[in-house]
Image (cartoon, rainbow, N blue to C red):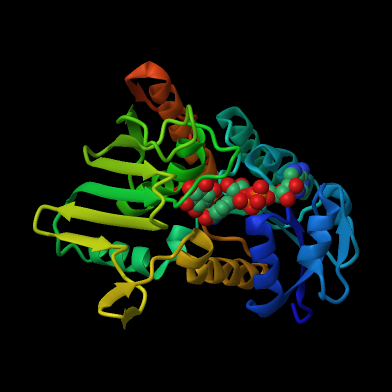
Length: 341
Ligand SMILES: NC(=O)C1=CN([C@@H]2O[C@H](COP(=O)(O)OP(=O)(O)OC[C@H]3O[C@@H](n4cnc5c(N)ncnc54)[C@H](O)[C@@H]3O)[C@@H](O)[C@H]2O)C=CC1
Ligand SMILES: O=C1[C@@H](O)[C@H](O)[C@@H](O)[C@H](O)[C@H]1O
């Protein structure tokens, strides 16, 4: 492919606007051809100054706009199923933000639709797989120096949650990242989940179960714990430590530059994911564009998206008082053969 890849971006909110900027200014070989958002003012603002872009209220109109050869879905999770099916119907490759489809039945419909096509068309936006720290952690585990991995300890804290956030979304939207990262790092499926609730923080909106402590069991007998705290107020903090038989490896403690002034020294803490994972999103979108230009789609698959939804749904049942809930996924189609993640 010699021409740049024309991308339709669906959703021009926080992530969509950031991906539009990235496609326009950071990633070579691609351009923003169309933007869709029911809030057309927001879409126009995100597309301002981009040559040749068209703006739409309806997602399907953007997919049919001139020059569109791929789709980046950054609308809210419940809108993803319709957008993925519309892209598949047009044979357009997709990068779909997580959660791919929050409801496992809908997620399975996406798997089945791609299997009917007989080839991969979609990549799911689990960007931790492109983060330098996570990649180093995975490399250490694969070297085998630590022996078998026994446990992962994860921390996922946001400074504040959006106003629409529910107790279930701490698992479906936030812990979704750790579910995928654990499957990918360990190469094992998560088979059971238990969600514990400490007392709620006074900093969380009334009624929100925040923080939560989530424990996953894996098929091979490892344990993964996740502290998720989406109104921690202090800043955005994502850490992961793998404990093996012979040692441990930990990422996420890197600080910003140390500023010393007026008798004290302090390091800056990023306030959100757009800053903390900026490099990972860049690498993710670059890899997606490069693969499409070579006629392929790689990265986290719709099966990975489905697996995350099934595990998260089990987590939601545990949160609602189900205790320890076992995960019961559908059979994995041949198209996605290989280990977990
Ligand atoms: N990978 C990551 O680290 C992150 C991923 N996300 C994911 O990105 C997606 C978007 O999240 P945010 O940008 O934070 O939400 P947001 O609420 O800031 O923006 C969503 C936008 O989508 C628009 N929209 C609603 N229905 C639509 C439809 N059918 N078609 C097109 N646009 C539609 C809304 O009007 C809004 O402008 C979600 O799936 C979220 O989970 C969000 C934050 C970080
Ligand atoms: O994906 C994300 C958001 O949707 C989610 O709400 C946040 O908790 C995560 O930190 C962020 O990476």
